[in-house]
Amino acid sequence: MDPLLLARWQFGVTTAYHYIFVPLTIGLALIVAIMQSIHFRTKNDMYDRMARFWGKLFVINFALGVVTGIVQEFQFGMNWSEYSRFVGDIFGIPLAIEALMAFFLESTFLGIWLFGRDRLPRAVHLLSIWMVALGSAVSAIWILMANSWMQQPVGYTLVDGRARLSDPVAVFLNERLLVEAPHTILAALTTAGLFVLGISAWHLLRHHQREMFLRSAQIAIVIVAVTSLLTATTGHSQAQHTARTQPMKLAAMEALWDSEQPASFSLFASIDQADGKSTREIKLPYLLSVLAYNNTTSEVEGIHQLEAADVAKYGPGDYVPPVAVVYWSFRAMVGLGMLFILLALVGLLLWWRGRLERRWFLRAAMVALFLPYLANFAGWITTEMGRQPWVVQGLLRTSSAVSPNVGATEVAITLAGFTLIYGVLAVLDFYLLYRFARPVTAPSQGDQDTGLGDVFAY
Image (cartoon, rainbow, N blue to C red; front, side, top):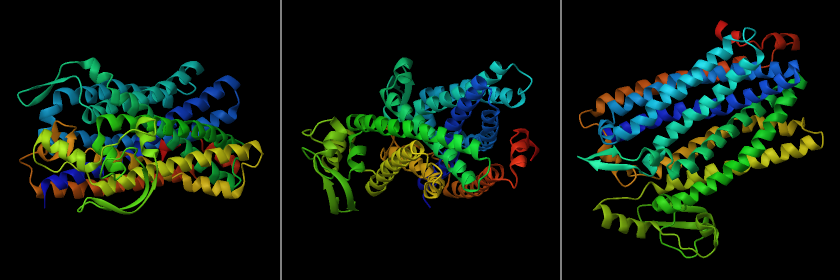
């Protein structure tokens, strides 16, 4: 067993589990805040019940997300000590600020929101949920700042084989962060919007509290329509940034083995990385040049040419990421994103025609509830696998970042343990979400079952 491969699997497994909860937490906090704001303005008790109902599900998801996130930071010291030694002076700053500022902001005001109902002035209670939403978004930004530095190192000097912070402003305003953060947060809002829409559709199919869940579905459709379109727009900006700063990643995303001018976008290809070629390929002329540079004439460099340039710059080695994985994960992300836009536009059209409760659309919305998770995973895989073999682009290879004195047996044992424990937590999360989201037998019971205290009593 290879300790490096096992360490990569361990971090990948724990990150994948944690990423189940993060986007929904970020997006659902804002949606609950919007619902409570409407109640504050209109004094319509239906919106108060909505905020309570979706707030229950937010609390469940938030609690399990915290549990699954704790282990990740310990792995930097356990399995990736050489990485921590190299980047700790820079990477540790946003992680520490995220914990000390954003997470405590989020968790403190969540407690105020949970236990301050009917004890605080309505405006103060409303402010608390908006602070939770702000804390969730800011927490994500600090983590993305650390990740952006790995994708595009800036504001550093190399001293005794370590990266030392020389320009904090450059790190805080990393160009990569400016395109990555909006895309990620908007995708989280799309995830939460489809979550609300899917569960609302579930209730509407069972004729349970029709007015409340119809309004929840309408709010969700508007959110998904806006954020899915903006996610695609910011994704285009991120792709153009990748073309300039990580051309090998872009070439792998397109399985572009040789430079093209103008470059075609690949719709489908059978990839043979061993021979460095693709077969049975279907292409759209000019479109990759448009995607990368907003014109139909620019050249896009191919994998073979970029590999030769990297060998000349960094020395002998294999600098090509796993092309098939990156190629198909990118297409899964983009394809699902287009599907979300289509679903939202169809929903808006049905709403305008007064036919939002058509059974086929509600069933489609229930299926779509699960698809953002696949899109989020696909985007994460594209971003991280496309950077290989670098853990810090151009500075530190993944093979050089692993802890030198940790054996395969130790990593294998902890990998099995984390996978088992996180699997149990994932099942628990899905069960609790089902338990508190499912329709009850009578509407009157449903109205009584909207208190957040039920989560803790359970």
